[in-house]
Image (spheres, rainbow, N blue to C red):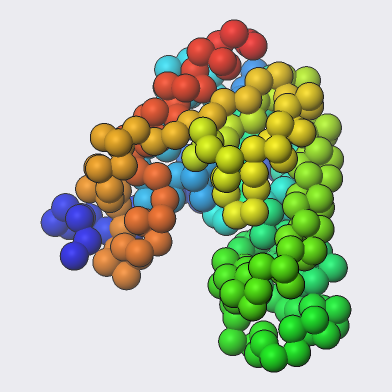
Amino acid sequence: MAFVQPGDGALDYFPCHYGASRLAFRGPRRDLTGEYIAMLGGSETYGRFVIAPFPALVEEALGIPVANLGCQNAGPDVYLADRAALEVAAAAHLAVVQVTGAQNLTNRYYTVHPRRNDRFIAATPLLRSLYREVDFTEIHFTRHLIAVLAGKGEERFAPIAAEMKALWLQRMQALLQRLPRRRVLLWMGGGSEAGPGLVDRGMVEALKPLASACVEVVASPAARAEGVRAMRFCPADEAAARDLPGAAAHREAAEALLPVIEALL
């Protein structure tokens, strides 16, 4: 059963574009002619299923436009491949960059969709040679792919995971270096050694020299208990909604970001 009020359903995200970017961002479109903040990340930053995601809450509290450049299931490749979006982010007074998973990157083993980075496109000949018993035509998402490969044995998967982690670090470093001097890393689900897909604390620590600050946000027990009650989605999307932070978790993320951003402005 989906916890949706009568008459509610899928949110209207007012999709918009900035400049010549091909990416559809969450709107309404902000006026970026003056000082603004840019927020980059995946589905959490985009605020899927949430009426007021943390970028909107930060904007409301500060009174400064916040360009929500979050893309559903995005990794750093989305921005590195879109010059126009990167220019918008680079021109911001301050940028917040969400730590996203390392599995959503094109690498020596497989390719992902250029804009929906969680979509597995194809295995390379190298990966096919390493996992001849796997039928890759039955795999459509990177999470499923990683689960299948890891399930074939930890020792077998370890070299692949290590290379993917190193590549993620390189791409995140390249992204941060293209952004304004004031950069804030946002690690949602921080507070433990493990983070989003294949990302660990050591990897985040390696990025800190390129950031002005790093904010770790762990949803409180109360926020986790809220579940999907304040989220808006169609019944078919309930499983996806349960995998994402709800309204209370977004409020906590905004509360954690606000003092850090205020100190840097």
